Image (cartoon, rainbow, N blue to C red; front, side, top):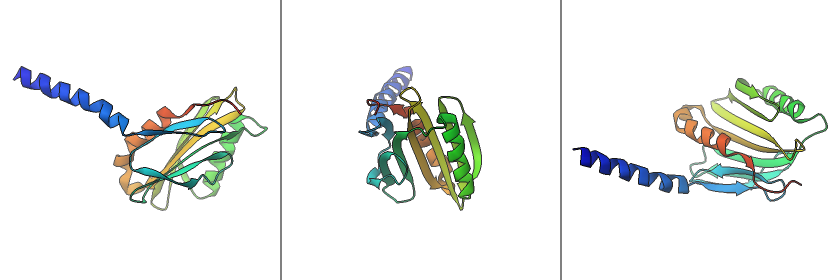
Length: 162
């Protein structure tokens, strides 16, 4: 019985790299913002946000991920994050999660049956940001907890500073 358990454990551990390999990585060529992209998402177009990036949409069309990099406005990183969160509130999102430091900010909210999770990090000595935003149906929350966690953990500066 212990030999069967050992074999099952080895098989489970061997499958982990395969699952991780299913994820891709997007890096913005100009600003160097990089993040892991889950399987089943494909590029739909450019991100409609300040800076440069990509919009990835799930195969089923129910969720999307925005990834972009950009310069920090004159007020600094913390000021820009407060302004972004205020813009989400002004757009009708009820902010349900918010955590900020001088180097990163993460927040999330709900509106009209949808949830979003956003994270931004200061890069290039605070002159630029790397950003990710995941939006998905509220009914799918259990399916997206691990995706949101991976997106947040993988967000990084992967390229040179502009």
